[in-house]
Structure formats: C-alpha cells, structure tokens
Image (tube, rainbow, N blue to C red; front, side, top):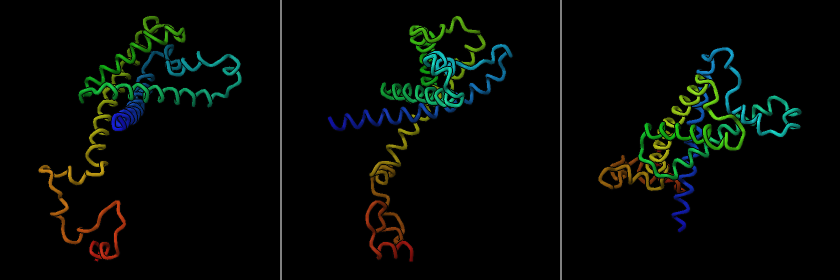
Length: 203
C-alpha cells in the first residue's frame, strides 16, 4: 500500500512538473500568435478574462493591476500543472502526438465545457475564429511539450536519480564500478568516505 501511495505521488509530481514546462511553451506560443491577430482581437486572452470574471467586483475595482497579472500567471500555470498531473495518472503511452491530442481535449473540456457551464466565459463557439485557432494551437503545443517532458522526467527518475542507478546503467545488470580505474574505487557518493578513499581518488 505504501508503494502504491509513493507511485501515485511520483506520478502527480512528475505530471505537474511536466505540465508547468508545457505551460511555459504554451505561453510563448500564445504571445507569438497574439501579435498576429487583427488589431480589434488583441484584447487579453482567456486566462486573464477568467480572472476578470471570477474576481468579486470590489476586488476587481481596488486590486492593483500587477496583482491581477500575478493571479493570472498563477492560475494559468496552476491549471497547466493540474492537468499535467491528471495526464500522468492515466499511465499514457509515451507519445508527443497523444499529448497534443490531450491538449485539444483539455481545450474542449475547458472552453466548451466547464468554463461556459460555470458561466465564467461564453463558449468558444461564440468567440472569434482566429482567437480560437490561437488557443487550439497553444494547447497542441502544451500537450506535446508536456508529454515529452513527462517521458524525460520518468526516464531520469528511473535511470539517473534512483539509488541503484549505477547498477541499472550496465546493460547486463553488472556493477560497472568494477571496471572503474583504481583511483575511483572505494569512493562512494552518498556515504561518509574515509581519508584513504579520498586520497586514492585524488592522489
């Protein structure tokens, strides 16, 4: 049971981190494409619109602009981390294409689903087509980047961050330290090394 809990915690952590990386790539895409919109469509994108709508009116009137910007960034990246963690929990096959498809599903569930359902924003079908295309492209980038990052994090966690990473790095399962030069033998990261150990490594 404890191992199951640790496995779940690892999936949530790696998925959230991958979601944050994907959101950074998504945000860069949004910024690049926003400049190409017609002038009349260059108003703030949905993450900021959502904050504007959910803030109570007194807070909206009195909150400094930079605080609203900070809230937008925090909510934007928080949502990316949460949806990345959810993706990791499904044990998906490692595929950037599948991640991109998941990004489109997140877009649909958000802007055609719970966001208009909660009466925060109008559904995407009532927004300008080019803004919808921007958001769809950004979610494709998010999903593909998130999935690729998750794969790398999972590999790193198993191969270079595990306590038995040295043994696993040998194809035959043997301990590659046996083939190390004499100067490196006896020196073990992670344990208290004697003066003799250190002198052998650094004569």
